[in-house]
Image (cartoon, rainbow, N blue to C red):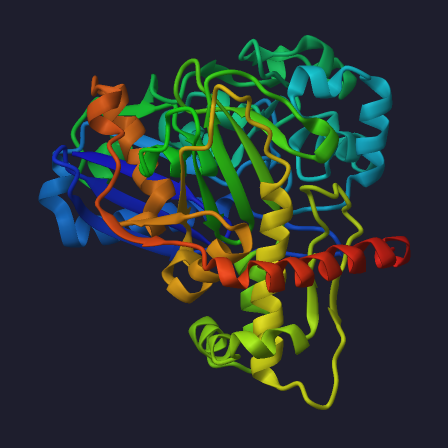
Length: 488
């Protein structure tokens, strides 16, 4: 039995996985994001621990026998967050999250300081990454920066609390701008550019390796055996890929979570920073991946459902689906940049726009525009992927909470003009991937552990709709270009 813990932005999820691939139990605890100033996004690590205590109590109440059989724990989580600890291991300030946009000036400074940044880290400097956050803290909170003894990513702070060990792994570390992604090691040059050294960094392991062991007192509290291993784990998207069995070159997915992600596995380091495409390490040895990220995907849908008084997101999808294909050309256009944007624009100042409203438009047309706008943003990211001729795109799965809407999945297939695959359990991808990495750390073989889940549905693009979507997409892109200079 294996336990996967997935520390997301909006919830912490725990999943029990049997070694016959059965999901025995799942528990969730909600999380909230603090936005004390424009562009800021923070969470208290204490909230993460409270959520972990809650899910473990729920699992023990419902699955005590299974918990006693757990041999290893895997960790997955939101990437890029800066969790700052002092010499005693105490948290110095709220964690600055992946979707925080305050460090635009620091990104420019880092780019000037390290001209080889894209070559080493495989990515442009963006406010979402960890290194610019530390430059911001050094400039604006110097008394905090002076006390920083360790910088941990969110899931790695959980590992520190679970084991007392400061450890990270390659996929999450690749999102800090401190890792030499090709060499899979910390870069002294990049660390020095932010006033840090290797002493501030956790030890590195591969995601499928043993990183630490669970503290005996926690094992006793939660009803686990002694000596439970903790796997290296993975950043959320690499963990989702492992959970869906997408670990071979050319296999990928589109994730419809708080953020929107297009991900493809590779067998080599293939950076393309010029178009804000990310090149990261995968969670398995000698694997990398390309990834584009838009900051507001399902979160934009949630915002629209709340703002326009839909009962919930499902009601918004139902209204959007009621707009006939022939009427979609007359709907407004929506730029989904509610938190700025990463791929392909790398513009923390980008803003959301609802354009072209008339008296003829009601809630259904606005609902369609919002979902379509997020879909166009994902298509822009998809177009940044660059695979070599010997590594064709073999498969694209649909994962994340938004994948529960088959209508949205079909719209994406039509806009991408790519077949999308729905697998059973896709909504639990990160937690499932974490549990699978725990299984690998316990001696499991990749071919057995990282099997594809049962197929649910294949969504094939409707070719007849391609030209209409292309026309709308062109207007969407032109609208961003026209307004780019107005965003402040």
